[in-house]
Length: 148
Image (cartoon, rainbow, N blue to C red; front, side, top):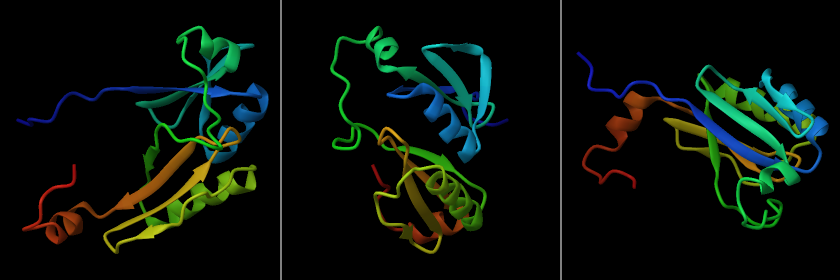
């Protein structure tokens, strides 16, 4: 019997300036449209059965919060992370994002047992793409405090 919690889904809501351009960008990276949740102000995209993003025009996003939408090219509120099954997959995903007009704002990280790169979408939202050898990471971390 596993003590792991039941799988949950995540829905990331992202304000975007140009909805059609953002949809094309994320499709180029490998996300798939879910047209059950779409209109002229929103589009759900899915990275997997449990990871989804809602791309929302600024007007639509503003209906959910009175807070100002920051310029993600200048500020960072969150760093979103996606896992991949290997180093080559990390590189392939980031290269797709770059070819679709994204940027790579932060240097890659290579710790041997963990490898990561990142991309910023057309609106500046940063996605970290990472691979980790969990067994090697646990071995490397023995005797050290766990990361917060």
